[in-house]
Image (cartoon, rainbow, N blue to C red; front, top):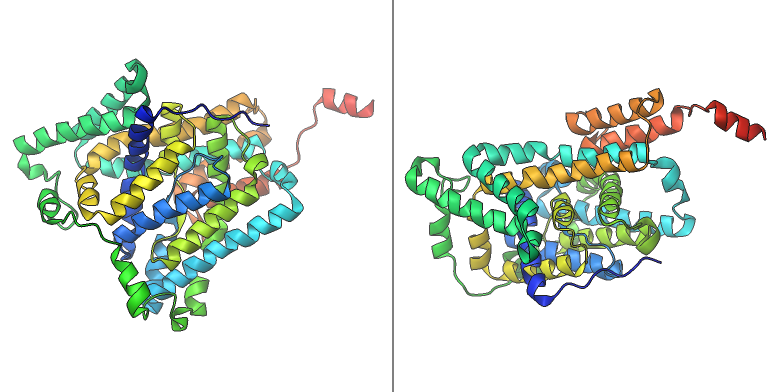
Length: 430
């Protein structure tokens, strides 16, 4: 039986929760911006989905659920052909696929997981989660490299030299430091446009014009009043849209397993045993279906927040639960969301360099601690292939990125025979 998590004092709990909010915010709002969904709704369904996941998993897994990038292209394609509600129907069914897989695993157990995902596969798959996000960190940092590097340096120095409370909130303090640097840089060189959005609008003007009045996300008015463009309208459940979006669940379930294993390696716990893979899949699936019903993008466990866990060493799930409550509140206060949106992308770029690198380092640690012999040609082939396919961007039969690397890694592990050493052969003969 796993030991309980260390308690987190209230004085530390709130800033730790806010830190997780900053870690997830940029990626979570980017997905609805790219797909045409409502940003406030995406925040609401992210916070709600995280709390649902925590409830179903018994509050054992310190995972935060945010908007899934894997569904961006299918949602855009399905929306163009069948409308937004049609795309959301596909997302809803994708969540149900998680539920079905969870029920299957609850029946047959997870013994096959160890066979399909030994350390030689898990290690590089975890590495591709971090390395696959490197492009996003680069793009954000490239907007203004000095700001990104200053932020990165601040996070590193605080993480390494910080004491007490300071040491466990390096991300939050790094963002504040980078924000201050960006303000000075933008004042000195206004042509940098660090506080403009992608449409060239002044973020501070948007903040000033945004009301303090709390309100439910705009989609809710449509859901419970107009209904025509929501999942409450049977006409929006179109097979073509479902077939365009729902199969992505095959890939994201593999990503889910990789994330759960990554969180387990980070915290030193076996979440496949307790609460069990069937419950984490069930939590993720129901969170995704709920998100689709309320008009948000599908949810997924977030690597950014895993990076925060690795840096701070605070693993108690109550921290991400508090973050989820903050996000729910923020989604109903447009002013707060507008304030967070003023954080320049190079500030987040500097932070994510370290966060994503931490995830990749966890994969390396898996190989080292489990003593995977890379002088063995079989192991070298598997690790090398998973790494390159996982970060290459190649797409084969709807599989790409970490999903493709994981599938190929599993197949190679099953197909390539293990070399039996002389010592093993002798012990078998005995």
